[in-house]
Amino acid sequence: MALHWKQAFTSAPDLKWKDGTRLAHPPQIRTIDELKLFLDLVHVKFCLIRPYFQVEDYPLAEFRELLPSFDLDLYEHKELPGFSLVALCRNLHYFQEVFQFDMLHSPHKKSLDENDAACPLTHLMIEQNVQTMTGRLAKNLQDSFQQRFHKKDITNLKRYPSILPTLLDMERAHVMSLDGRGMFHLSGVYGSLPSDLDTELKRFGLKIGKFAVGDDAMYERNRNFVYQFLMELHGFPIVSERRTSASLFARRLFRMGENFLVRVMGQSDRTITTLYSHPENKHYPRVEKIALVAVDEQQKDVLAKLGDGGFFIDPEKRIVALRVIYRQHKYSHKNVRQDRALSVWRQEVIHPLTGESLDNINIIKDTYNMFLRLNDIVRGEYVGRIVYKRTEIIENTDTDEKRLKFLYAWLSKHQRRIIGYSDEFYANVVLALDSYMLSPQNHDRFAPHRSLYREVWAKYSYIQQARKVKQLEDLKDRQFKGKKIKYIEMLTSFSEILNDLKFEIVSYFDTLVEQVLFLCESILNDPYLLRTYIMKKDDELTPYGLSIKKTYGRIVMTLDEFKLIRKSRRSQTKNAPETVETSQSAKIALS
Image (cartoon, rainbow, N blue to C red):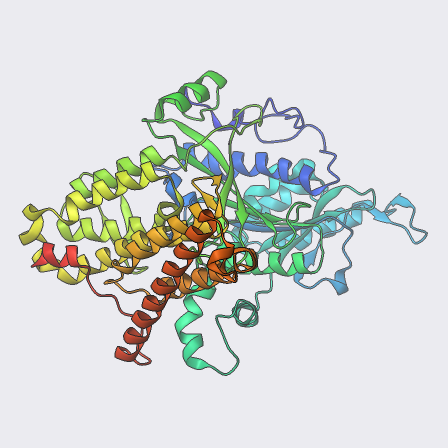
């Protein structure tokens, strides 16, 4: 039986409810972690569960939308709630703050001698707070708000659930901070979170080497990559002003050393995103997302576990509140997955009554279901929506044109995972794609869509090559399939993969070739190898040492061949944008 939204979190140990919408006692919250837990429960109840039951055809978030890299929003759902919030774990100093907002005053203020004391004019302060907030509301909402909260302290978090529907009608952010007792309270409304996007973008691009001062052409080539990477570090695609401002403001607070929380919910993504300071995160604020998702019916074990624990909000439709916590990755040009800014670290399902979390669970990174969806796409049986190249919404896969566009979007979405996942998973992906892309029976059907076919094949070829480059990256650290290996095994495997890769770069990708050259140079300049084997005369070496020296020589020869390939390619395309030739197997399919 489905939960009634007013029942949500009524059994949570830290929240005592007077009824389904009002708290009985003020929560005693002193830390960001405590505040985040409180806000999680209140926001999930009022901003996710309540709309789910009250809005007809509520647009659930698909769990793939919670996987980086994040998709662009398909639609704006004006009937759904949206808000932004900033919380600082300290007292506010109004003039010194780095953003604008309307101040609300807690009755519990610091007196001049720094001792806690209640303000002697409490009733006037309470009235002023109500007036301040009323002045920022639409005219038709002002009278009802005045009547409901007249002579009530709206800064007390006891009343936060009651005034949240009003805050959701306000375009700008609300603010929380510590009062004179060291407790969190609502301390401001109508906040504008500054977003100096131009400065941040250029500074970050220069830092990671994608921009150079005064180089317009380099800026034009790399701007979208830098913009997307910067936004994804903070949990978003390139999206609305509200979420852009929230992410960049969180970045600014983190650099300032603040103990803070920034939260935003868009009316298009149906997802609560939180960025906050955490002692384990040294370089970026931690990112979390919460959304309502439907658990896939194929995940029998997961469904049984969730059902037994009472975690379903709507058991018939398998709906749960899923919290996803992410791990950020510094940009590195040495990594074949250069665009990987974010990855899933942990998944938690929130119990709809108690608020407890179940964390030993996998809903969104299930490779079996990823493969099933790929199969559905190539068979033309997938029902859903994707955004093709940021501009076109594609519904279902009932034609080859749509199927190819879905494949392009699917490969783009999961590129980093396909490069890094197991051999078994990759073999299944290759089997599914080859059965469709290289089938002689599909030859005539692809003919009208040659350019689209080549786009998909180029994406596929890039992944195939990048997966081999990823193997070379692992071998450079003497790792093979998760195990530490000897130098001879490392060099032999490296040489074999390098030789295979040499024949696959009919589809040429300059970034991958550059990565191959870098990895080769790194291995060939290994000080231990040079000192122990390569710089010694043959008669000084054991048979094992001679085999290492011989394999080393093969890698030197292959490296020279790669350099010739790159030189030839660059001479053909002087200063031209990177292009991709269709591979031999693709040419056969289209011939």
